[in-house]
Length: 128
Image 1 (cartoon, rainbow, N blue to C red):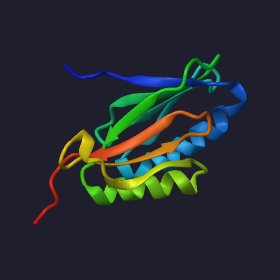
Image 2 (cartoon, one colour):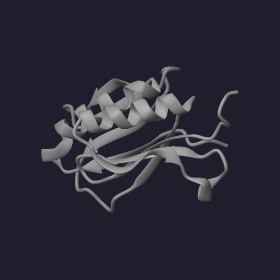
Image 3 (cartoon, rainbow, N blue to C red):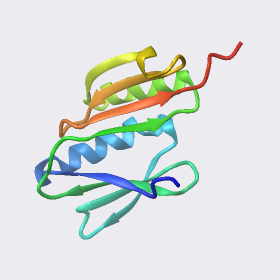
């Protein structure tokens, strides 16, 4: 079984900056802003297959979350990290191997404008 969708809540004053952050940060992973509901207080992002599975909504923010997005290759992880920093994210771990998570676990971490820890990861071996 897989997760159908997930999302985060951010304070209303951070919503616009957070949506812009994810538009830029998730583009290397094939995501695009797909839906805007309830007077633009809920925004859905769809993956390259058109599945809207990442949501950002305005509301009372709860605890910070960690979300990892799968990347097709290590170069895409690098692009994700660069895009996130360009969009105003704060570095929380440069792209690289995280061998404690597995021998091929290549990830990068950033904090979004609301302080959530967002990651891109590729667990494929390096192509020969």
